[in-house]
Amino acid sequence: MRILVTGASGFLGTRLSTALEAGGHEVVRLDSRNCDLTRTDSLDRYHGRRYDQIYHLAAWTQAGDFCLHHAGQQWIINQQINTNVLAWCHRCQPQAKLIAMGTSCAYAPDRELVEENYLEGRPIESLFTYAMSKRMLYAGLLALRGQYGLSYLCLVPSTLYGPGYHTDGRQMHFIFDLIRKILAGKLLGAPVVLWGDGHQRRELVYVDDFVEITLRLAASAENDLVNVGAGEEFTIREFAQRICGLVDYPFERIVFDAGRYVGARSKCLVTRKLRQYLPDLRLTPLDQGLDRTIRWFWSHRELLIRPAPQTAAPQPSSSCQLSVASCQLSEGETVGSDHQQTTGN
Ligand SMILES: NC(=O)c1ccc[n+]([C@@H]2O[C@H](COP(=O)([O-])OP(=O)(O)OC[C@H]3O[C@@H](n4cnc5c(N)ncnc54)[C@H](OP(=O)(O)O)[C@@H]3O)[C@@H](O)[C@H]2O)c1
Image 1 (cartoon, helix red, strand yellow):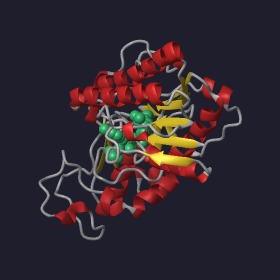
Image 2 (tube, protein in one colour):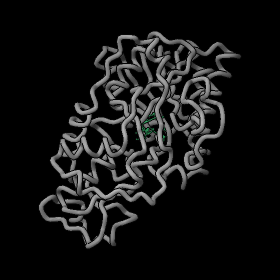
Image 3 (cartoon, rainbow, N blue to C red):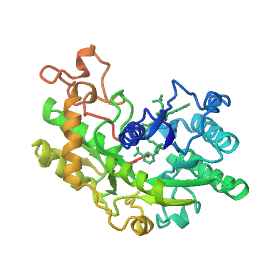
Image 4 (cartoon, protein in one colour):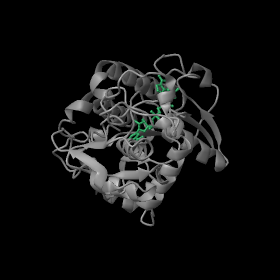
């Protein structure tokens, strides 16, 4: 098939595009450098080709408190990106199936995280704009389906993890942040402080499992919204314990700061519909996924383990980007930022 992928340089887009190419498809990979989707004319030069599938992954966001502090920009940029992609699909690619990404943050925290509730209630305040722009993306799919017969699939991923995450210093999704803190505690001897009592529960999906699910659903599910989660969640303590076991760091040395706000106590997608579509689905066991992720993390430790901007004293020199043997933190400084609990995805 001929396939176009937006957001192809991202954590998910890189692995999805590679899997599509490995499956023998012709893939056009778009990112913000070769096609700035905030521009209305950005897709003009792709008019000439007909695509069978368009995977729309591009979004302007990060984990942690990024959404809280960039709400206005996020509203403008993500609305532009989504509107331009949907309008182009309608105008120039009516034959294509559009596979778009939603977010579990779109669900209101007081409702069951089941597909029927995706547009119900009010999303959590700190992720409100990001969540609403994803709801609007879904609303756009429904509208174009209703008026013009667009063929679509909207997937709602839980937090994804695995090798190949960003190494550019941006805020990390909670599991990467946990790994970073614990590895830095081991390597630098710094205190590892996690926010909250550690009993808040979170769900993860291994990125390659998500890619496989996406490819299978793209071939079998039509005009539907589908949650993609593991169907089980673990406490932050359990994640930390497993990471400690895998990197050989004493769990007892972790300090839980119970006075801190940590967002929702629990966040687990209902996956009944996913299981109906894919009854034979087998997911990567958590320990195996964590092991692979930590190995990847370890091989990029020079880039990934460093004091967080908000807690770090002014950097004396670039050597503090962690040369494992030589870098020391300032006295009393904790390693890493503290967004392992807010899980903006
Ligand atoms: N990762 C998760 O846990 C998770 C969970 C739920 C939903 N999702 C959704 O899944 C999708 C992929 O997630 P991800 O983690 O792979 O995201 P990501 O790593 O942040 O990648 C975002 C992608 O969007 C592109 N992009 C940003 N602004 C753009 C613009 N103006 N024009 C064109 N492209 C632009 C980026 O290009 P550059 O690299 O050039 O900036 C990048 O390729 C997103 O829609 C996200 O909301 C992700």
